[in-house]
Image (cartoon, rainbow, N blue to C red; front, top):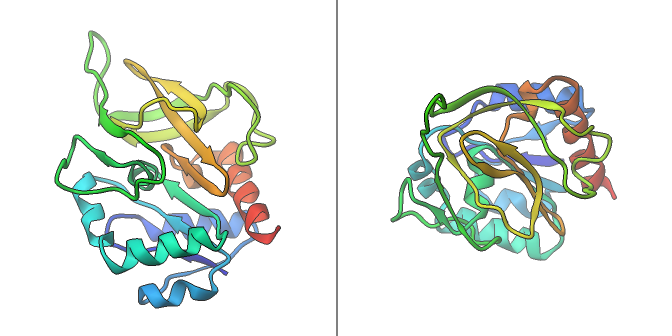
Length: 200
């Protein structure tokens, strides 16, 4: 089973529906100790990075231990940002730190509104297990004001005032800034790909 982490910052119902369409059921662990039997972990999230402070301590330790055992992790929206070291949005809150770098606010330039809300296209610079079967320029649904930097782990980019990491991939750690559960066929394909990784 794939564990869906509930730390009070995500629409769990829509994520569950998305994974159901991708052929998988999720369970919501009541405590960090319940991650021991998880075949995959999903960290969703919307809103301010400060909300991820609820993951500090036992949850972060348990998630790191699961990753060390080879359990795949998928961060969605705020969950992708949490994979990094932190965010300028809440400098006092630490991220997981699996990928080096800090998230920053999208620039509000002429004609560009922040937050970035709505459909936008993906640029896929190289092959990715998470994005297998997703076409270049596929449209996916975003809603965010802060974004992750471009790093060697960047699997897809998008542009909204600046180019940012729309997806990341490092071994069995994955993240998407957009909401795959709200991104039609491309989003469901991404969820299917993650499910496939958890079963391999």
